[in-house]
Structures are given as C-alpha cells and as structure tokens.
Length: 229
Image (tube, rainbow, N blue to C red; front, side, top):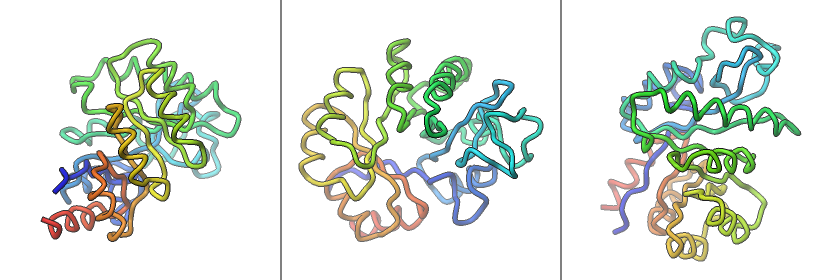
C-alpha cells in the first residue's frame, strides 16, 4: 500500500467556512488535514494578503492598502499564525500579464518566511508564474517550490524543475497518470495535484503514489485512505 499523500485543504476548510480566512484554516486543522493551500497577493502598501481573486468587494488588491480591505482578508502573517503545525502551500498569484507583481511577491515571501519561527520544511511555494519561482531559487535554495500547470507539457516542466531547483510539479489532477508519476519518482521530484474532490480519483492517485493532493473535502479524502487500508 503506498504511503498516504499529504492532504491539503484547498483555501482552508472551504466547504465549512469562507475560503482563505482564519476560520477556514483553523477548521482545516480541526478536521485533520495535514496542511492548507492558500493564495497570496501584494497590496499597494506592500502587505502580502490572502485571497483567491484579484478583486475583493470592488477593490483591486494590488491597488488597495491593506487596511482598506475587508477584515476577513488576512495578511499572510496572520494566516500562518492560524496554521501553526500545518504544512502550508502558498500560491503566488498574479493578474493576467502581471509577472512583475508575482516577482515582487516572491521577494516579499523570502523575507517574511525567513523571519518566521517555523522551519522552512513547513512550506511549499507554488505558482503558475514559473519565473517567480525561478527567482526564489536563484536567491536561495532553502524553500521548496512547485510548478503549477494545466495545459503545458509535463516533460518540459519536469526538465525545467530539474534545471532550476524546483522540488515539485503541481499539475491539475486530470493530467496525472502512471507515466508522469514514474518519471517524477525517478528524478526525485514530488508530485502534488489539484483540486481532487472525487473519491474514486483520490483512491486512484493514492495507488499511483502521489506525494500530495489539494482538495475541497479533506475529511473525505482522509476517510478514503482509511477505507483503503
């Protein structure tokens, strides 16, 4: 029986509480998730803010001050405080064509995470903006980074990961098959996939031996693994 993958609650326990909020992260811990996945933007005044979409309550996060955003939108520091003991997959966000913003978030993340008391092994930094992850690895090898993708060639991205110091591929779950899993295992690259809510698919991915899965229903994914044992 393969080892159980790390189960990340997608945007926290998003089926039970407002996503990407302190409450959703605390609930994820209560239901037994190994970690959470959350999304990070940079506000106009330089704060890293946790929210999925670029706009909240009509405010473009990148053009708003942190104090002007709704109080349910936490700073990354507040979110990490709520996630103590959990692994955290931090996704760097960027508006279309907003690579510069993603690069600035990457720089800010390095400084923020270095100042935290937790070990660097608690975090995975992921993004569809692969250049932002390259920037992190060029500056330091202490953080684990994963390439998010949907319609790109996984063979090309596996080579990119190996050449640029990234530890993982993060494909959409529909792309994952035995060939991809075998290739990543051979190269020592983790395979973490999103967003897996169908429990038959969860069991298939467990059988393939993936390293992590991101799900809206972490309690159901954990129960599926228990039933397989």
